[in-house]
Amino acid sequence: MKILVVEDEEDILNLVKLILEIEGHEVKAVSSGQLAIEELENGIPDLIILDIMMPEMNGWEFLEISRGKHGRIPVIVFTANAQCNNIKIAQEKNVDYLIKPFDKQALVEKVNEYDNSW
Image (cartoon, rainbow, N blue to C red; front, top):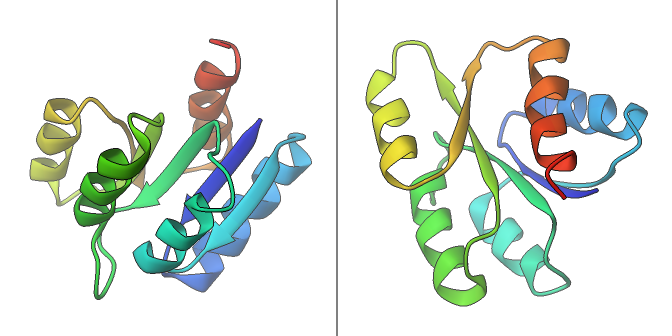
C-alpha cells in the first residue's frame, strides 16, 4: 500500500516511516502540509497519516485543500490525549484517528484496517 506520512516532528516522522516500511508499505514522508500538497501532485496515495498540530498549515487545513483537489483519500490523523476536540473533529470529517503517544502495534493495526479493506 502507498502511504503518505505528514508529521513535523522529525523523530516521529522517521519512526512511522520505518515501521510502515518494515511492514511492507511504500512510504513517502514529508514534514509539512505544503510539502504534502506538493507530493500529492506526484501521485495519490492509498492512505495519508496526518499530524494535526503543525506550523504554518495544520492538518485540518491540509485536509480541506487536499479534499478540494483530490477528493476523499483515506486519512488517519494523529492527535494528542489532551486534544479531545480533535477526536470530535476527526469524526465529523470522516477521518480516523490515532492518539499520541502511540505504540507500534496500534499504528500497524490501524493501517492494516485500511490495507485489508482493499
